[in-house]
Image (cartoon, rainbow, N blue to C red; front, top):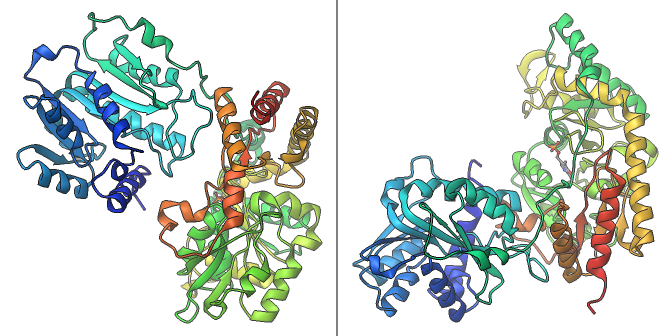
Length: 603
Ligand SMILES: *Cc1c(COP(=O)(O)O)cnc(C)c1O
């Protein structure tokens, strides 16, 4: 899919419109009163009403209700241009106001006719308040690129609103923006001609940026309304892979061999050393270009592509999107099934109870956040049903090397060596199994189905690991003991800090989960939101690693699924906290304090 993430916003608003019609709710505002308040605050962008006629552009105009508001207020002589991405909304607007100018435009499209929105003032009311399924970074990109695109076409100034961070808790679907971050963005465009309003009784604020310095009103008071929220200063994950000096001997070997890919000497050595570490027979590891590729290789090499009789592949709804992407690439329809809220995993019994068991061609249990998946239960499942199983063990590398007899066997496991995983090669992965025949088929599926000769003999892809990535993997293995020690220390220090703060019960760290995760399971969804707000206010990044579940990813949201209470519960409550092999004590203390403060009963 080449669509930009913000395409999800258009889907969201079109959904609201078809559910609630041309009402405030239909534009995703809680009620008509608040909508009109916002219209007035937006029009406040116009410094002097006597300088009419003027041109007002309404970006994200929806069904054109701002024009109705202008006319109600007797400001019909303002030339209004309504612009929106939604063809449906613009069609409704044109029907209501046949004499007005409405334009369907995606201002971020490379060929957008931006000159059509040339105006004196531009308002974007509610264009940046709902982020729906986007994450903060994606929404910020959308806002920043939109503002930069329209700015050269505005003669006077612009106004738009975002949600405040000075709230009791931040909603995950809304875009809460620290005011200082937004002011920094606007100062780039407008120098010091920026104003902020947070005085109209709604959990948001409006910013105004002007092309020329404003002299009419000094914004001293308004500037104070900016919440003193900090920038994000600590990222949720700061990976550390081998330094260049440690790569160099391996890179020199590449220079000498002049073999750059196709299971060359470095990839082969990496496979052998990994097999030894996991107590697997020689040939028990096939390297792959990514964790996703490893999954695809394991599926194509064993179960193969979906068949008309068995179109479904069961994947847990609580996982990283790669699981569903992989089965879809192999022709399966992902069948989203709930996980157990206690152990976060898909249970064979849940799949056995599926009324469409006969149409399931594949099951992909996931080692959620590095919690390993037992071989025995899934071997029994296949023995009973004949349905093949491939385990997405992407983040479970440590569990596999610590207890290979429990977690490795004939059921193939796909691993990810992405930089953010505990063992990293940048991008990379592997198919591992005690069944070396199976692993060999997986490797062939990752190399165009070539079987010795250059003859494609099976369904395949190109998912090989290059020699350069293998070099990183070998250097990572050289330093693996040190890295593990560092990650264990992070886990231990988190455990101590959370215990000291009296909140140890909700903390999940290695070895219970992969060491690339430090997780806090809040007592309930509401306290999780309070924890998020406290972390954001302290400049500490956090992440719901699996988003809000696969069923809420735009692309997969169309899939039919049953109730997902376990997934829902975890998605709301389980938060990823900052991790790095060299995470400072000070950060851990700050995190513990922020979480503890958020959980203390209000006084
Ligand atoms: C990381 C991960 C993947 C995919 O790995 P990539 O190497 O990024 O392709 C798949 N499944 C799960 C559960 C993961 O955490």
